[in-house]
Image: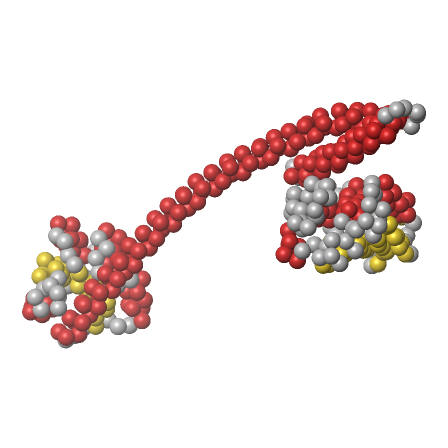
Length: 391
C-alpha cells in the first residue's frame, strides 16, 4: 500500500480519531482533521492532499455534498464519502458529485484500505484519460488548423489553375483563329491554281499536283485547328447541349457526302437507314462531330478499295448507329487508351492523323448524354456502336 496525504472531514470527533488511527496504521499521513466543510476548504487552501475522507453530515453551513462540489471545482482531488445513510435520496445526491467511492459506517480497516486504493486508482485513470482527451483535442485542433491551411493553399492552387486554364484557352482560340484566316487564303489560291492548270500550260501536270498537295495540307491543318478549338472550348467548360430539330435524311446525307469528299483510298461506304423518322431532336453540331469522325476514321483505316458499313435506326427513343470497317483493327493492348487525346495506335503506319478524333467523339457523347462502345480485332476490323437520346 502506498503512502497518501489524507484530509479527514468528520464532525464526530470519536469517529474522526478512530479513522485517523486506522489510516496512520497503514502509513498514511493525515494532513488535517476538519469538522466542517469550511474548515476542510481552508486546510486544502494551504496544504496539498491526495484524497479527502468526507462525512456527508457536517457542522457549519456546508454539508459534505456541497463541500465535495467545491473541492471538485477547485482542486480535482478524489473524495471518499463516509456516512451511515444508505437511503435512495442520499445516494442520488452523492452520485451527482461523482465521488471516487462511498463507504457505509461502520466500516472495517480492510474494507477502508481497499476503498482508498480503488479511489486513487480510479482518480489516476480518469486523469490519464482526461490528459489523453486533452492531447487528442489539441491534436484535432492542430490537424484542423493544418487542414484549413492546406485547404486555403489548395484553393489558391485551384484558382491559379483556373486562371492558367482560361489563359491557355484564350491563347489557343486566338492563335487558332489567327491561323484560319491565312489558311483560307492559301486554300483559295490553291483552288485558283487548279483552275489555271485546267488550261493549256507546259507545267499543267506539275501545277495541278502541287496545288492538290497544298489544298490537302491546308484541309489537314484546318481540321487540326478545329479539333484544338474544340478542346479549348471543352476545357473551359463552355460546351452545352443545344437540341434543335434535325431533318434526319438530309443530315445523314451531309455527313456521308462530307466523308466521301475526302476519300483517297477508293473505300466504298454502304449505308442502311431503316425506318427513320422525318425529324429528330438533338444537338446537331455534337451529333455531326460524332458521326463524321467515326465514319472518317473507318474510311481512313480501311484497306484500299475496302468497304465501310454505316447503319442507322431508331429504337426506344434512341438513335442507334453501327459503323463497321474491315481494316487494320485496334491492338487489344491499346484499346483502353483509344479515347485518350493524341493517342494513335502503333499499327496506323503512315496514315495522317492527330489522335484527337476519337477524343472529340468521347467528349461529344458525354455532353449529349449518349453511349459508345466498340469491338475490334487486328487485321479484321472495328465496329463502333452508338446510342444517342433523341426526342
